[in-house]
Length: 101
Image 1 (spheres, rainbow, N blue to C red):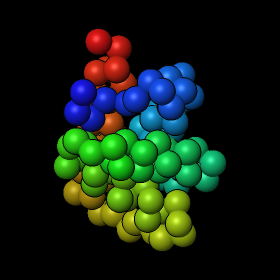
Image 2 (image 1 turned 90 degrees about the horizontal axis):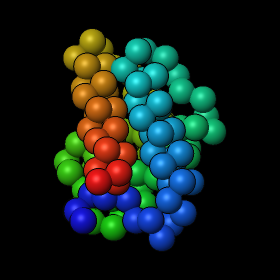
Image 3 (image 1 turned 30 degrees about the horizontal axis):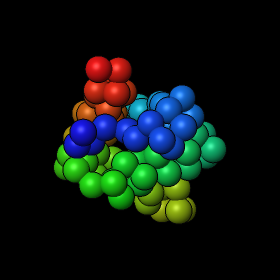
Image 4 (image 1 turned 60 degrees about the vertical axis):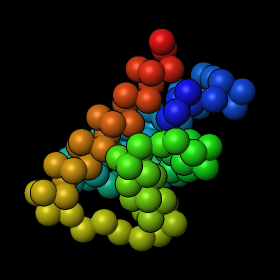
């Protein structure tokens, strides 16, 4: 159960917001700024997962980055930082894969 989304929060809705987190991280990895509404939805989804406990360090890092941007901060990433953002997008995508099992 560690790191898996809680179906009691709305199953499909949460899957969409996790998808928004993945989208946002992928946009950051590409050097673009994600749509604000999707960024906020993704940040909230990861924050919810983080608060439940048991999230991996990658998910915690992704949550922190999206929260920073959603609250008005900026991430000025070099190539290495964008590669890390792409890795975090993959780590968050694995949450969706785990939910389907």
